[in-house]
Length: 325
Image (tube, rainbow, N blue to C red; front, top):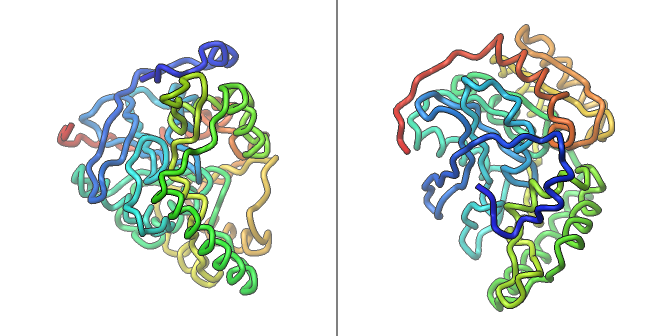
């Protein structure tokens, strides 16, 4: 589904991209709905795609056309992102919310187990989910972030103070209905490109912006970021390394992890390697390195798709489900 305010000239820049038909869906949750893009048949349990922090389901737009046609793919917007409902005022976003979201999806569709593909923050969360609930996962795929970060105690304290202060400011802005900054389309694209440290190619930014922006009513030539600003103060997992180690030991399902070369390890390489070594003891674990940025799956989807499809062909079992749409 294409929003009417998409810059068509910019779309043409991504000449290798081929659009794949999908259905825009809304999944009811206690605070509203979760928006999603369902690719493929509705009577088969899908691979569920979860995006990174401040991105949305559009992060998989270029990858989805390369995934197996017989296997459905459901890319969702997390709470406060994309077209999904915001959490109620007075609440805060936390990585635990994503674990709850996965369970809510399973309840809604009556799945006993789930297959997950996560990028960045969600890659960390599928690791945590599979470790917490090993009997509820068919397989998991992680893109570029292996596990949650571990911060020194002093940084945890300073970040907590910073996020608390910022949360109060953002909450006041919401109450006051403050007008967000607005930009023309090209300015918006450049601002977003710079904001992600150029991890997303300029011509690929549109896939995120289509679901994260809206035109101003008083001046449709200007656009603003429509995601919930409170997600900038997201509270991430703060488990110690000992918990990461135990989670890794509990994961027995097929697990594919892909690391991008032009992306940091997002934490201590020592702790990363310790968890990686444990995961490698699982005979169904695969580790691959691909040339590219943190968003290589969006910029150069075929590089990632070839690895993902090989993994899926080995470990996927087609499971019919009741069509609840």
